[in-house]
Amino acid sequence: MTDALHVVLDDAAMVAAGYGNLLASRLIHRAHTEPDWFLYAPACALVEADRTRPGTAEHIAALPAVTVLELDLAAALAVARDTGWAAAHTRHAAAPTPDRPDGAVIATAAPDRWAGQPVRILDLSH
Image (cartoon, rainbow, N blue to C red; front, side):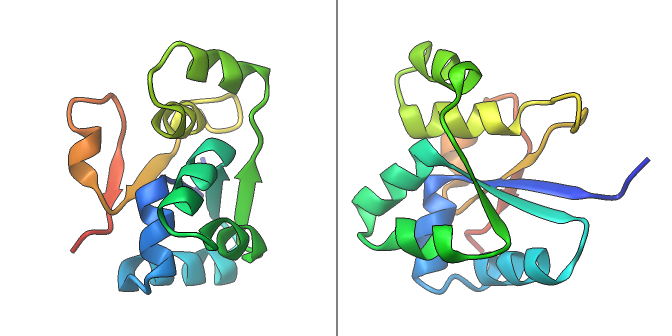
């Protein structure tokens, strides 16, 4: 059993980080300094964040603690079944995998958008 923390940033969390959100900044810092903390930025959410706040994609992608997740076949199929690319890719990235049987937590600055979804969230809006 590992105490690793896996966190997927949604587009709202990425935008918040660009605006200096303290909780987002702390999360990114901890992922940079703690060996068992992992942050992921789904490519579709990264695009949406950059549309909201230009420059966000370059900022997030440049952070050494953040792994950008490409839109592979499994993610593309998940996105194809949904109406919003950013949310669908984020939800897919947080789903359990053989490497992460418990899945990942979604960090968001817009927790209401995940209401009723089968995901765990980390609220960055406070």
